[in-house]
Structure formats: C-alpha cells, structure tokens
Length: 129
Image (cartoon, rainbow, N blue to C red; front, side, top):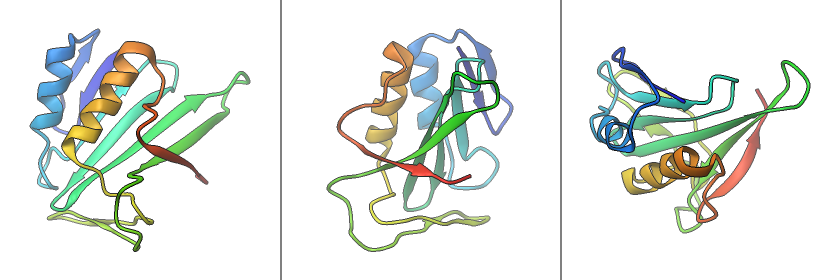
C-alpha cells in the first residue's frame, strides 16, 4: 500500500497513524488538497479537500488489464441539492450529497486500509470517466 499527497508525501506501507495525520493536514486548495491511498495495482481511495468539505472517490481494478470501476461517495444524510466543492484555487463539480466531512473521509480510508472494502455508511455511485 502507498500513501501520496499533493505536497509530495510518498510512503510505502505507511502505518495507520501517518495516513490519518496526512488526511488531517490537507488544505482547501493551496498546494496540499488531495491524498491517495493505493494498492499499487490501480485500486485506490482518494480525497480532495475544499473550503466546504471533501470529495471522496474509490477505484477498483477489474480482472482484465486496464479495466476499472470508479465510484464517488455520497453522504446519505447530506443536502439533496447539487453541490460543488469550493477550493481557494478551483471548483470541483459535484452532484447531490457529494460533500463529506473529514470524519467520513477518515472512516473510508480506514476501511480501505484495513480491508480494501468501502464503508457501508456511505452511498456510492459509478462515475463515467
């Protein structure tokens, strides 16, 4: 497993405490706004922080080389309106209930870290990339 951040952090087989700390240090778009935890085989969980929350995506590699399914997490209790993730340097498009809290992001990364399975507390929709 590998942890990477926009600021250039790159750690193979990080302990959980480092992963959790890195997530807490993300900023809303001034040079360190995203983090990725990956298996090395194109399966990963990634988050992007903005001033109004986080977006979270999960990618699962298929059995055939180059195939994958990419998901976006949604908060089942979140706003039903369309939401964009606002950053100091950009805006990331979003759909309903896409904005998550840091606690939700940490929970999803922990789920990936422990068992590489998405947490059931979030809803997931397929992204067409």
